[in-house]
Amino acid sequence: MDIYGFYTGQLFDAHKYLGAHREGEGYVFRVYAPHTSRITLVGEFNDWQDWEMHHCYNEHFWEVQVPQARAGQRYLYKIWHADGNYTEHCDPYGYGMDLRPAFCSVLRDLSEFQFSDQTWMKRRTDCKNKPLHIYELHCGSWKQKKAHPEDEKGEWYNYEELADLLIPYVKEMGYNYVELMPIAEHPADESWGYQNTGFFAPTSRYGTAAQLKSFVNKCHNAGIGVLLDFVPVHFAVDSYGLARFDGAPLYEYPDASTGISEWGSYNFMHSKGEVRSFLQSCAIYWLEEYHFDGLRMDAISRMIYRHGKPECGVNNGTLEFIREMNSGIKAQFPGVMLCAEDSTDFPNVTAPVWSGGLGFDYKWDMGFMHDTLSYFQTDPYFRSGNYNKLTFSMMYYHSEYFILPFSHDENVHGKATILQKMHGLYEGKFAQARAFYMYNAIHPGKMLDFMGSEFGQLREWDESREQDWFMLKYPIHDAFHRFIKELNHLYLKHSALFERDYESGGFGWKDASQNYPCCYTIQRYSSKESIVGMFNFAGSTQEHYTVHCDAKRLTVLMDTSADIYNGSRPNTVGTVYDSEDGNFTVTLPPFTAICFQAT
Image (cartoon, rainbow, N blue to C red; front, side, top):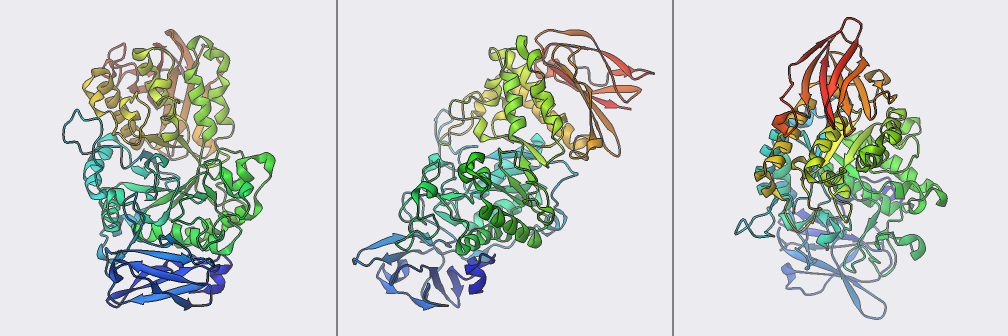
């Protein structure tokens, strides 16, 4: 191992040296612990008896060889203290862990699964000029095994079983990527995976490393990309994890005022080289070993600013780490996507590192998400006075490479689900939600939706229960499900909706002046075609809505008010509007969006 690179934060493969690795028939165990004078290894291979570890590399690294160790066996490190006591720790670089509440590390042989996704891996890109519609899910609560259909809760599917259920559904529904909420090992189901104890260990809730590899392999061979939610900001406080690993702060800050996050977890001290090498190697590990197509990095605003607050100042040391990590990842894997969850207006998050940016490929557009949801939560009577909540995003949409996220965070904890957020009573919410989703599809930017939104989930997400699939037996939810499926396929089919997402020439307002209350028109362009979207977000019909477009003919591709979606009028698909001067007059029922082919 490059010891200098490890200490200076330049290493991207520390996981290939530290942790437990096959050597001959057995395993060699190595751990970094500079603040202790004694470490012992216990496990199933030595009947949980203390085996002394010895220095390797230098006095900060420890090693022991165990010829009789085998894949699948459990083990722990005992970190001894000056008073003669010890703390048991799982392996920071361990590739597997026990099912909670147990916390032993588990030996894994990562070579036991062979990928067959070479074609996908050669062709994958960052999708800047291609369609990107992400289906975000939590592996334990998308669907569950139930002894009886009426049971409220069931058991988890393993990774392979999940793939067999998920892949045909995702393809049918017209999503082309899935994003898994964090699957690195974590002690509390309620944390959703965001407070990790095993950064290199796929959670045992859903199976083994080989089963996770099979999941990704199956997705790739079905033409579906897989993104992973990655947590580089903080870690769990559990004593068996990284917290005070060798009796002193090693991965965290020594000062609690800086070291404790708003979630009660420990913040990584990104200025330390060994922490940088740990996190960079972890990112590479998931991309290299499991063939993930990208990382959505959580809580980047907390890395840009101290405590995520601009008034606390820019965290320059952490920004340096982000740039170096992203540069190193892209050098090895140029086709992967690095996505920042960032709610700040810090500039150049998605600009290349060489030009002064942070080097992410995409940034979540949290402003667009909040403004759009706020608009649709407003009583339609007052929407005309809030028209700028929809138009403001068009002032900055080309400043970064944005993803439009309607994620798990917008479906939990008293926030109400996306459908529930629509103003009004139950039945009236569906028409607004249909118009809302078509607006998102036509707005510049890539898309992300959370599981359950596609059929109008009403209950806020609960990580312990599967989604309310029974709602599909109700015609209004089934019709909404059909609408989302057809809208998704429309998006995948039409290049004007994705090819020039981030170019000023790919988008134009045709009406944002409020000459008609709550009406808007957008025109999108690609090298092959043009698409027009007309929107009436008012609660009343616009009988003679007239707007000028760059076209002589508009042909209806999709109408959210169609009766096949539980709307108010017969399906208008195929209806043609002709105009010699480019002025078109259309009737727009309440809460209606229409997508046209412009020629």
